[in-house]
Length: 105
Image (cartoon, rainbow, N blue to C red; front, side, top):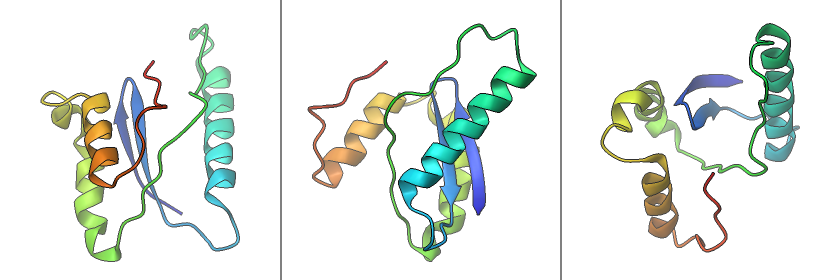
């Protein structure tokens, strides 16, 4: 179930509650596929649209649901102060995840 969606020109956030019967990768494939189809069908003026190959996924506790929803809704304002790339690197470093293989488009 989709609980929130928001973003800016270079990225999107989707807040999901996943059923245990569907994997995260299946949900991402579904979201990218159906949204690409919708964009091509409803916006033929867009000559070229594609999603990047990868994605980032993070889990949250139920106590952070509303805070996360508000964060997603305010992406435009938020990224006036910090770029997506800067923020993503901070998140990855904070959780000891590798950033060496990231490619920014």
